Image (tube, rainbow, N blue to C red; front, side, top):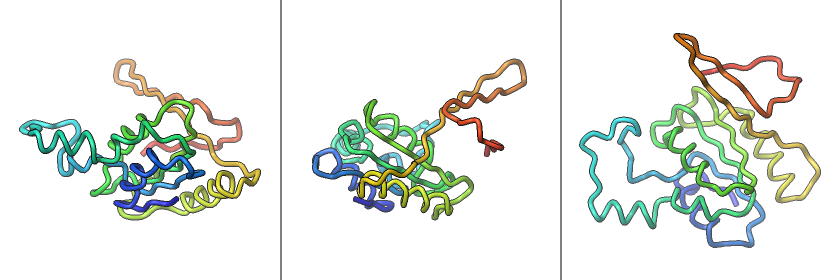
Length: 168
C-alpha cells in the first residue's frame, strides 16, 4: 500500500487494522493534524478542549503507529509547511520495536522529495512486496552532545564506506 500526504494519514489507520498488507510506503503524512499551525516547542495559549482531545485520541494517524506490524518506508521533506518534520519523527518513534521501519528525509525540500527517495521506494517495494533479495538502506542513529560551546555529532549504523556526512 502507498499513501501520499493526507492519504498517508489514512494509511496509518489502515495499517493498524489490516494485517494482510505485506508492506507500506508513506509519504509526508504522519498525523498531528490537531496541532496544525501550533509550534511544537511553543504551545503557549494552546489548550485542549474535549473535542480536540477526542479527535487526537481516536482519529489522528499518529495514534495508530503503535499497532503497525508490516514493514514501512516513511519519506518526507524537512521543510514542509503542511507536514511537520519533527512531528513525523514523533510518529515514527511510536512504531513498536522490532517492526521494520525505514525512513528517508529530503533536506531543504518543501512539497516534494529528492531522487534518493524514489530509489528507496523502488528497492523497498522490491524487497518487501516482490520478495526479491535487494539491499535497502538502514537507518542511522545520530547522537548530539555539547561540551562548552562545541557540538559533537556521533553516527551509529554507518558502514566504513561513507565518504562524507552533512548536517543541515
